[in-house]
Structures are given as C-alpha cells and as structure tokens.
Image (cartoon, rainbow over all chains, first blue to last red):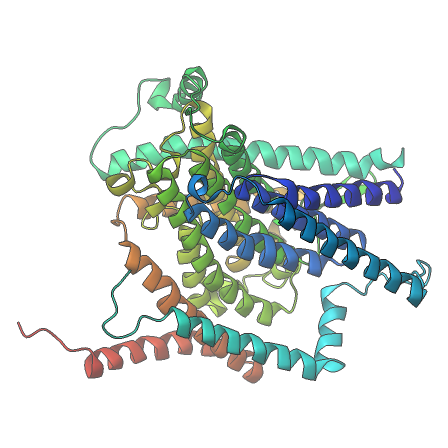
Length: 171
Length: 374
C-alpha cells in the first residue's frame, strides 16, 4: 500500500471527526470525537516518524486533559441545560465571523508563498527522543526552562485555587 | 506483496501466542482468585467442575454468554456497548511493548520476542494505561444510573491521581538506564543487576500505583459494593459484565509483566549462561520467556493476596495517599537516584535513601504529631 494513501485516509478521518466535534448534539459525543481527533493527529505524528510527540500527545491530551473534560461534562445535567436551538441572528453572526476568518487564512497562505518541505532532505531521526532531547537542552535551553517555570506557576496557582480556606466547608 | 514475508508471519504468530497466553492466564486467574480467597477464609472454593474444579472458568464463560444481555431503556445504547469493548482493547494493547524474551532464530530469520520494539516503549505503556479509564468512564456514564456515574467518576479521578506518581517513579528508572525502550531497560538489567536492588523505593511506589490503576483492592472504590451497589458495572449483565471483569484480570497480568520488566530483570534468570551452553540459545530464550511469565504470575498472586488481606481505603484517604504521600515520595526518589547516578554509588544510595526516608518519618512522628494521651 502506498504511504500517501494512508495519509489521505488519516487526514479524511481527522477532518471528519473534527467536524463531528462541532456537529454532534450530545456534548459527551463531542468530547469522544475530540479524543478520536487527537488519535488521528497522533497517527500523523507517526507518519512523520515523530514517535515521542505521538506518545506525549496521547498521554497529555487523550489521557489526561480529555478525561478531565469528560469528567466535568458528565457532572452536568444534560437534559436541563440543552437549549432548543440558537436564534437565527446568532447563527448568522457565527457564520459571518467564521467565514471572514477563513478568508483571512486563505489570503495569508496565498501571500506567503509557502514552500512545501522536500521529502528528500528530511532527516528521518528528527522526531526521535534522543535528537529532540539534545536540541531542547542545547539550542533551546532558555525557552525550555522558561516554559517549565510558566508551568510551575500555573500549577501553584491551581493548587492555591483548589485549596480549602480556613473555616470553609468541605463541599 | 513483500509485506507478508517471513518476519511478518513470525511477528503475527508471536502476537497471536501472546494474545492466547494473556487470555488463558486471565481466565485461570478467576479460578485461582477464588481458590486463594477460599484458602484464606478456610473454605474449599470451586471444586465441582472437573478435578479440583479446574473447568470452572469454562463453566463461568458459558454462564456469562447464556445470560440475558440487557441494555437499560434510558441508557445511551452505543456508548453502553462501547464501554466494555474499550476496556478490553486498552487492556490487551499494553503487552505489545513488553519484551518476552531475547531473539530467536528460526531457519534464516531472527526476530525479537517482542511485539514492537519502539524507542518510546515505556511511554507507550504509560499512554495506554492513561487511556484505560475511558472504558469505565463511558460505560458508567452511558448506564444512566447514579451509582454507575459515581463509580465512573471515582475511577477517573483515581486513575489520574495515581498516574502522576507512577510516571515519576518510572523517571527514576529512565535516569539510570538512559533509554525509554523497554528492551534497553531489560538489557541493562542482565546478569542479576535487577533494578529492584537499585530502586527499592521506586518499586514500592510503582506497585501501589499499579494496584490503583487496576482498580484492585484496597483501591477498588469504583466498584465499592457497600456504597455503590456494583459501581460502574451496576447495569451490566451477560458477557459485557464479563468483559469488564476480564479486562481487570488482563490488566493485572500485564502490569505484573511490566513490573517484572522494569524492576525484576525481565527475561533474565540465574544461570542463563549455563543453559545457553548446554541447550543452545533458543532453549535459553524460551526459558527466559517462561521466567518472565512466571514473574508476572507471581505479581498476580501478590495482587490476590493483598485483595483478601487488606480492607478498602476511604475515599479521602485514597486521594491523600496519592497526592500528598506518593508524589512527594516519588520526587524524593528522583533526587536520591540523581545523587546515586552522580556519585556512581547507586545501590548504596538507593538503600541509603530508604533509610533516610524511614528515619525522617520516625523523627517527624516523634517531634510534630501530637499523640493522644492514653
């Protein structure tokens, strides 16, 4: 089988499941389609020989963040919170905004004359853990450390928000 | 097509064998669970189907398939069916990266006794483990039952909490081996240099997290009968329930195999050089695979032993242990391992770390915890 056929199949699947995220009526279905979309994107990483990114994408997004999403949405009483349908004005405004965003994006791509990467010059080991680690810890050390500080601050903030204050009830 | 060459056939048959072994072990785990429970409670246990009751798993399977397959009226039908399927799928996927043995040469083909040797092996395990909760979460929600939902939510929060400590305990292993590949981790442990000697604390953390990830007692709050009827599988019947229970036993076996791989030398066993000399490399490899499965079965026994010995945690105790017990401990373990790697004295510092930790606990207890005056 040609590898490009796999790519077309995978891309089609990705777009389809991403569309279903928006179109599904049930929020739980939306979340599950989003999880599936992440899997398709991980498949693209595998095709690019970026195994580490694939694993991390699954662990962080599919495995942790989406579980929390599902967790929160399950707590809602879906039947009560379902609005019958949005008003026509909202739909119209939404279409206009999304359409103009699409126009801007297409214009941007056309203006920039993006050169597609050549397959022949592509180093196959770029996405491997060793290469990635060496690049991160030598060339991009400062940004890497800054990002880790950012994460740390976010973590401390989350703990602080979640902390029960003195005298507050359990729930 | 050149896809179907001899390596492909060898790999496919190997994966089929692993699949069958896993299912067989899981089926007989149910029998041994009941036998061990019976022994610990001074009973006889199942003894009617066949000699010593060894046909009991077969009888159970027939019963499960024959029962009425019931789907609750107000449930979400597709998700209700998807729940047990996802549980089985994620349970069976982990074994792909466990190296069951060294290479085998058949004719002119040499292949590894391992499903896929990727250089992210341990991350694969970690990723699949983190997906394992979806089956429970979806099944519990789709049942449209408050008890199921509570069980599912408990499962989700428990798995997410214990994954962190599990990941941190794996990091200490990675620091020593310098590779994410499970094969490389096993090869670094050959000739008796098992990681359990270097990482006693990491192993204890990993073991506790494995209990929590498999939803086994004392961490089986998602299916806590006294509070939640049956937990996430309250509404399930027939083979769908069977799949949920089966997935738990598969998870136990596979996590035993992963623990053997990470901490107990994988397919290494004493006297491997002697066996290679006497019987040839193929026999040595096969005995190695047997050794790995034996180690995994020993872990399955420990899972059962603990189940019939310890009572269940309370929910706040569970969360307290995960977040304020195991995670700081795993961080401490990483520091100790780092010191060990730096000074090249890994056994000494690994054991020294445990001693310092226990001493610290005792001192803290003596100084700061107020004792009730008896």
